[in-house]
Image 1: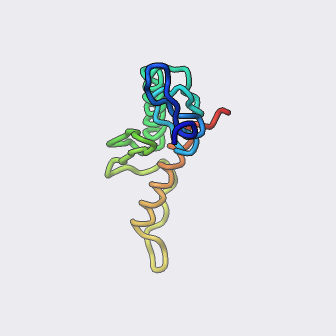
Image 2: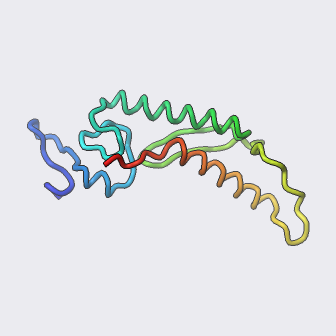
Image 3: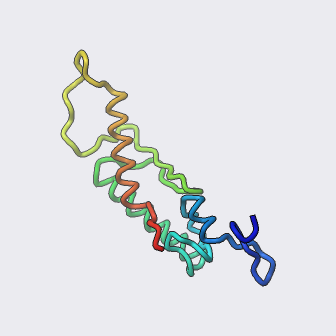
Length: 129
């Protein structure tokens, strides 16, 4: 809705409002003019360089944790991380599955939770109101 979600600039281009970008809930790293996530005033190249740096740091942290990523990317608010098939976090190994104990699927859930925790610390862009 014009005025609430976007306005037109002098050249007739749509410019999303701060409110719209907040409601969307994620940063696109395109250097939006009214970005509430810390990218306002940056060029698209600067915003993309910031994203690349964040992904690089995340990859380094994942490797340090014993979780080297096969694939690492970000698009439209979605982080894409695929750990290597033999990835094993640098934490003490739990005892083998016994009756009533979690097995490989639970181990995979622990791995995914660790990936998510690391990703949140490196990629989440806080609202800088």
